[in-house]
Length: 534
Image (cartoon, rainbow, N blue to C red):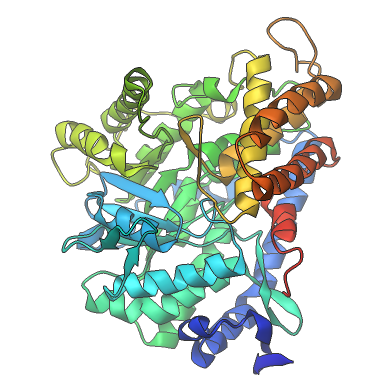
């Protein structure tokens, strides 16, 4: 039997009674309207992505668009940004589980990005409970008691809430219209906006979003049209929604001005999503034998191509009176090892001092234990709420700057790290966790993408050679994987071992398949829902 609201459907067995507070008839009707108005455009834009990739595979180089030069040269700015988004010197990111939301809102960060995308494993339960948790948090009805009896509740003063929906490439298979799955982006945005926009405004804040994995200004235009429609539907003043766009794809780096221009009534800024950006660089030029990335730990923000894109984001944002947010500090505190802990903190300190000095208005951390350190750094170097006044007119970033191939070596340890991170992350994802501490770093989907993408690339191209002269081959990777897999399995119980073996098979498929799989989360999403009644 199917539950139905007009043509929108959710299988009855997926309807936990607790979900009724989110999956209301009116909210589902709103999702259906979003789907009918915007899903075909989304699908067309995904087709455009595929066509551009075909051109890149044949040797076309990315460049700044000649047809939008007038936008880059214009003197326009974004609309006024609300008071509670003026100071974003340190933001924390994380998944949407109840305990995480409370801790993140309480940790002293200026903002919390509640992430339905790279830091959340998108099981049906995680997605809908995440919406429930956010709704409760906005109304201050949220608390949590851990198994050890520790109780968590909101402080009087909390971080500003910003939500990241899933990217355009993801579907939500559990909700369909005319038997077609809804866009995961529209589900995450629509449910959150419908239930919370007016309450957020009542709380002197607003519906604020991070937009992931945009590849061009047409995709930004689609989001802007969705915002206009959603505000009209709920009778909310146009421009109330504010969005920060993650520049985490290489094509988007060539269209920063255009992306802000399309969203100018709703734009709050741009963010340097460094890990996804590295993966995008690898993915876009995967067929080019001369474009070989070294070990992941060698591709830092001081790498010329990474520094170029960061500086261009600062210059672009400040010219348009928007905020330029720095990238993620993936390091987490290391308990019981003072030396390793000092190394982690020193890496974060150096990274954030560079960002503040270059002109970023704030930055990201992955762990509450890093908030105080990063806040101190920005307090010292940025005594004002932001530094939009730093126009950085000294910067001149070219096409070659953005496309320069990073130098560095490929090592056996780099292969092993990629295997270990990729398999452990996918296993945790299949068990419902999307943000996973591995080797003292907080890993998410983006770093797992780099892990499998690098091995795919190293195996296939002549420059995929280790620093000791050996070729990277399927046989070498298989031998390393067998040894790493034994170590991984020894860390958990039978349930974990089962997830690890599934993850291992998927990892093998991802590095063996031609053509390259665009996002590991798409086949992983199928595995995540195997055996469910969805």
